[in-house]
Length: 287
Image (spheres, rainbow, N blue to C red):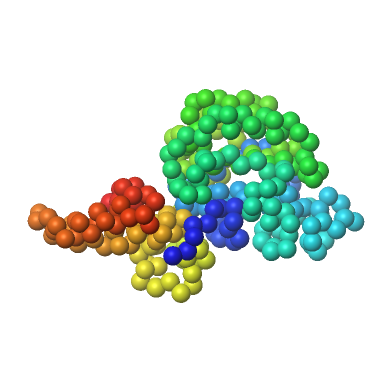
């Protein structure tokens, strides 16, 4: 099995053309809002969108006579969404070492995506110090909060203080998997981008990019059905025995009202396997 990729390491932003156009239009017309709330179900690529836009903005040349980070593009004020292997900005964002990008997320975000663990309020307060400094490379200072669902009331209030008086030349991406978790006071200070479930074609591309082009077509079809246009979840099902758990679930339901002990035992083994980082959550999602 492949390794689950953190969104900042994803090289291609697939789908979401409407949202991409909206963001780029505001940027090119110099009407870019300081805070963007990215809403939609988990696994759509909202964080990938935020990292992709951050890479693009941080890569823009400061003047046309400057050779900037191995980028031969002559455009000074246009966003290039294509990932460039030799672009030092792209690589620093990928490794989370860029001086002008601050990421607020759970400590175990790379190990357990979609966990409900709370992000400590102290992490949110770090943004005040981050935005108080001058941009290290002369452009914008960007923050990504992934995600609002993991902030408690104290964290939300700390964030609200920043949004009420946004620093100059800043850009903040707020990610939310459940809009009911977002305070109205936060929402009112953001430009909202709503993300929709992806098409089967786009979902296929994302799953294949992460798992491998040689994935069995039947399995790919199952992953698409189970994830319902949220390929991130499909990838996690694949990585966490999801297909096998689903197959045993079907067999158990077929045998009702009788209880198939053999299938139940195999299902338990899969749920508690070390290869399943979600354990009962995988079962709950599939049911």
